[in-house]
View 1 (spheres, rainbow, N blue to C red):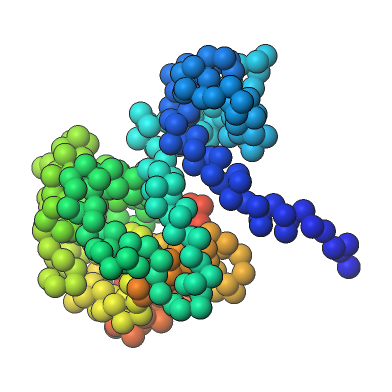
View 2: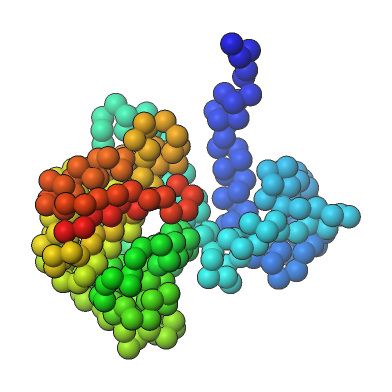
Length: 336
């Protein structure tokens, strides 16, 4: 039997120390600065306007956390922070961390209350609009949020574009398309696919800019609407990336039924999220994401592959499977 250890308890219980150190580094755009030019302690203190008391410990803590490298007194990005936390790169995922810093960090302080009440602890708690409504009313905030979702989903989007048997299909609709990252990767990897981005009308300018920037305006167009109020546009493949977990059980089932109705016989539904393993013991990120849905929304939760397969079969899908994508993400596929 293993000797009891306190290391994991302390590391997890005080994990917010490391979390906030990384989030502040993203807020200060440290990694973007280092991608331009590595720097010494004195140089970075000046470039980031850091107080002399804190700068040395801050930078060396990031070294110890494996987010920076230090060689001969000069600080550099690691390969991972250079790829994913440089704002100038399309692979930037810091937008999600910016949102965590600006919103989620404080809201997670209410987790115990949420666990006892089942109520969200986000903007909804104050009686004002929810997060989606708030960002939708501010064009720049909306653009930033949609860009963040593109960066966060990029790896999974590329995996779907390469692993799904696209040669058997001609058209696809991306439901809750945001900036259009998923349908873009599918179209870039599969030149025969024509696509639709389906989302709220205010998303259109950001979507169309992104599609045009990728040279796909002749094959992908925007269809405005709400997936609650309107039918999903018809296509051979319906895709829902990081969508289903936002909603309660009845809303999840409703969206899957709508997808089924939008498909021809032989058509496919692709759902992907941070799918929890069926044993509910391994995908830590997926389980914590489900707690984040508790913090954020009135009914959202993450789910296992077996859960989603059950909902798909209830809607009428006859053939289903689960496939891991990248990181914590997996896709669940249903064939009509």
